[in-house]
Length: 345
Image (cartoon, rainbow, N blue to C red; front, side, top):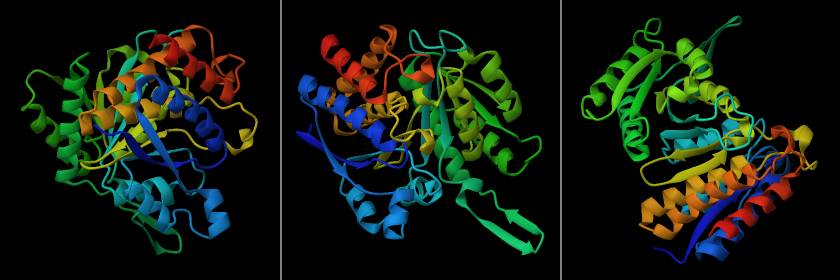
């Protein structure tokens, strides 16, 4: 258990700084209520950093992240591939975890949606291996390895055990067309499933999965899939529970993790206090739970749970931003969640 955690904090671009400042109010409430210290080490990355310094991800930012216990990143703009994709590879953050949950009072497709998408985070077409072979012909390589498939499948089954809700893993692929790459993914998931007899297992083709997320989202527990499929499906799934403003994400490896809202930086809304900070606030909840597990710190785990309860309570009381049909600004939503954390403690 630590007195304070060093958190590399990247405010990001566009609405990112506003989300960050709203989230800091929640950090203060957590420290005051649970005694969990979160020392923010502010570092630069993203479009504005590129414009100022000529590089989207400076070496000192990387060094600061390495010296931290975890990283919380706001959204960045067109340089996302140079920032978060690079960081995922640098720190081998192979598991992208995106909870999809309907909270009280928000406009959700169904009232009891609660599942998580576990997405492989270091392979697939996002490796950026693209080539021009003629003036009019281009190739993008899809890299899928047995090691990558096996570790993400194991993470998904372990996640199902941790959640203890539906106790089901759904592997999503397109092996009927991409017989080698998706074939390897499906084969590996089936093999890993045998080691978890207490967890039910099913497979869906990605197009069917996209339809079923709309048709029966409440039936899912843990979805495991490859990098690009997971990126697309998680954005679709977020819309079933109120939109991307309610969508936190975690990039988790064996030794480190980076947490973030999953949406972009929405530059047209920058400075207007329109953005919903719940995505970044809930990312902090994920971060505290991860820190609690990693360092055996029950206070951190309780603080993470309290943040989620604070968000749920604030929403239930009608505290909502414009994207959810409310009237609160970004900063005001941060205040509302902070108040609920203290009230519920």
